[in-house]
Image (cartoon, rainbow, N blue to C red; front, side, top):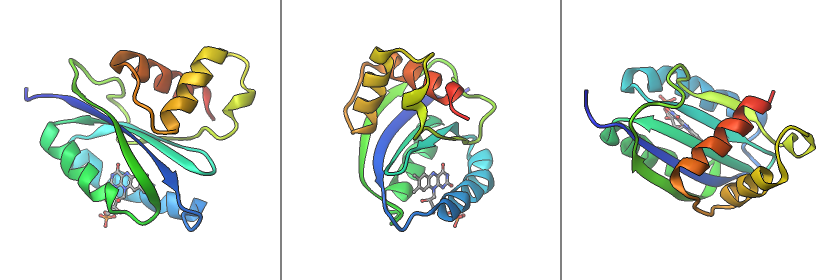
Length: 142
Ligand SMILES: Cc1cc2nc3c(=O)[nH]c(=O)nc-3n(C[C@H](O)[C@H](O)[C@H](O)COP(=O)(O)O)c2cc1C
């Protein structure tokens, strides 16, 4: 088996990126990610995105270069790009959640909320910590 990497970035959602546009992004994910063996999660709020991609370095960097050019978001900031031993989201060719309402969830700790907000604002976090916080938010969102 080849090398496995994860890439995390955050970005600002453009106002023209309506929910219908997000649906189109998910259609692209469904079409393109399986053949590149890319898995991960895409989360958004009203004004931000955070995406976690995992797969072969060549594939995820190629996709990231394409995504960066997408006019539906701006200020794309890479938060993490490191090798991983195994996939965190092996069955998601792009799991997708709206995390905009999560501040009201009581089973996420204040510390985790703070970390998540920091990430979505484009601040890098310690590698493993960032993945566990993302996972928690993903699993708690609808
Ligand atoms: C926040 C965000 C995340 C995206 N994630 C992916 C992705 O995981 N896979 C993908 O193929 N396209 C993704 N896109 C869309 C790409 O930028 C691009 O529009 C798409 O890959 C074009 O492919 P298509 O013409 O085959 O649909 C994303 C776009 C945005 C704004």
